[in-house]
Length: 114
Length: 113
Image (spheres, chains in turn brown, yellow):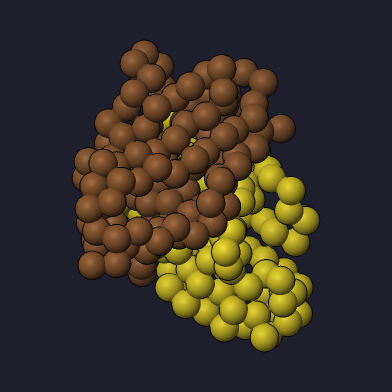
């Protein structure tokens, strides 16, 4: 069975600080990896995804993530956060092929103070 | 907006009652998945429908059931509601059953009292 672990449940940063949210997964095969964001009162939105190729993927709003296969990790980064980045962030994994579904981590609530 | 719409947005039910939640998938998407997001948790997979048939199920009891219609819209039914069923229920649609990107609706907030 696949599982996802997010390292921090709550993170508080000041504007312009750098962000790194940890994500580790366990799965016995090839995976697709995702980061979703949920702004207050809004639906889950895809921030970025990794399918194959360059392990450093860039997403919307200046976010990026690095897939490190040997560490089963897919950490999310942003060099300088803004107040508008306040949201909940979810890492998710999906095995490849046939019936396969997203498995989410418990989420990290990011609060950015102006 | 993702093109995935859910109704109703909020619902209050009494323990023991039954509830039906609805989801209209994005145009052209034939696969719908349902997730339960309890407070402080990530979404948990309930089940998935592909071309009107259930083709995957998470660790949820049989009182959670669903349907997918020919237009690929979907329903989630929960019988004999329990207090722990209080959660945000999310619907996601994707292009194919093995499709790699899912688009989520805004969810239905169910409160069981």
